[in-house]
Length: 207
Image (tube, rainbow, N blue to C red; front, side, top):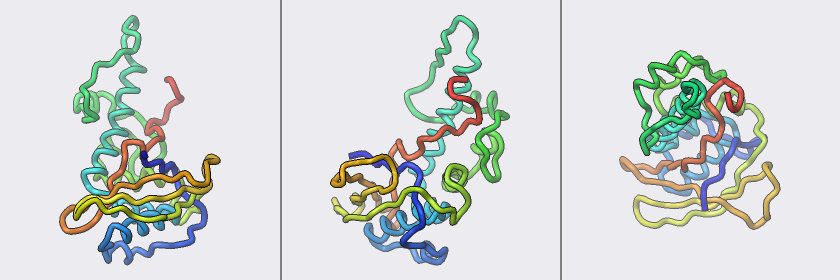
């Protein structure tokens, strides 16, 4: 199953105080519960702090990559059909970023352009991006997450089973999976490539 978190959650049943993240969850279960509580409460810095650094960087680079490709297609020379040649990875092309860095993005605290967003530390980028989509910290959310249980593969890989409530109608037995990884002696959330579904750019679809 693929992780299907969209953008979280109304009036949290659980709230995560800043000191709770500082205590560092010691197990996969504690990490998953802390992540869902922070999502449901709209505590974006706390959410970001629980994300594996490498996973946060992939998410930031993917969002930037998609924005750059969209801009390249929008500015392609006539007769090219909007075709853009890119590598097979989501690495951010520095030349393309310089070319489009001044383009405005969706309103985001501390970053008004693509270049300013790219300059943010990955987990800071994710926190501010989520805030731009779902509102300032503490804003009542439209979706909540029900923790079900955790499957531990080994001492560095685990998977938390959960249900999301408040989104599109789904079968009551349907569930999703949140991946967890142990790194540097602690557990983190490892995000799927579908976590960030919204567009970074502040321009109409298709142009």
